[in-house]
Image 1 (cartoon, rainbow, N blue to C red):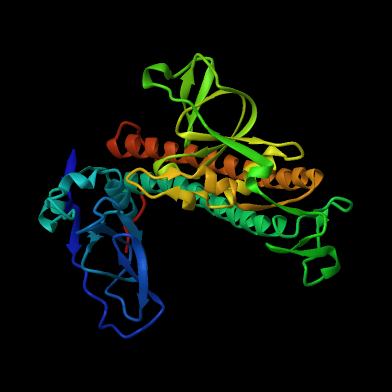
Image 2: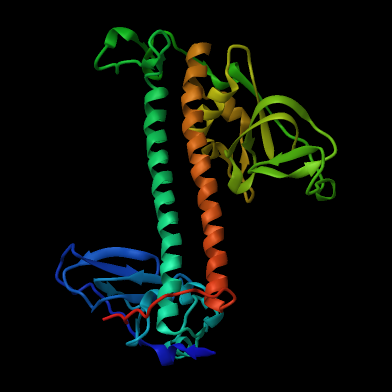
Length: 375
């Protein structure tokens, strides 16, 4: 059994907020989320916000006081309907199919009212919402951990690539301001005395990969094929064997960094970086990732990386031992990031599966006692 949105909720229009008194306690929502704050609410209480114009396929769950602009509708659940369940039902629906415009996507309240959702009694609605909210809580916690590790790495990059590590103590050097005697002046500013400034072309060489046809790339074979954005598939031959860094060479992937090892095939969309003696490949890979290499692409319809420009760039060169220490610390934080990102991907897949099963009724929920409706 299904029910239409017209049977289970009411759609309220948004309004322009620009004449409102200023304030910072009431969030203003557009189709992309919070876009500012005001001092007075347009609506209150648990609601589902869904796009009227522009981004129409990204429903938002809100509580408390809020204001929604005129590009996004506010949907209020009727008495006896769980709003969080209604939100997940929206989230599980392809709202883009309701688009009524040929230009900017647009949805009318009339079309929204015709939406049909699999019907559940209130206790089941509540249980479904609880299960999916639990999944969301895990996802949000993981996203917070990822943001934390990214912030930690950003701070580490700043310190490690300006102050470096004192290999006798294993700790960061004091800053130049705290211990100027540990530094020397260079064309890149004050640097640790043990470091040198060289051109990138003096610490590595760069060469484009080789062309490969799509017919030569398989789902499974002996050797991985890498392009500008990592693994593309597998093939039966290899172009390189060892420890390398790859840099994306064309289009939107210009400057993208991939660390690879072993036997692999480098396609024409990647530049293979080979380090010289006394250069640690992991350190250089981390350093290249901070240099925003995509800015050195040649302007054209299909941007292409200018290897000659890149090889002329100045680069700070710590001692080999210090390079390895720097790389070790950055790889450790990268590993934590990758673990959290893999876990996030897994949890998002689990949630998607749960939504599909629970909201379609393919998987039944078990509840022990009735739960009262939203106030």
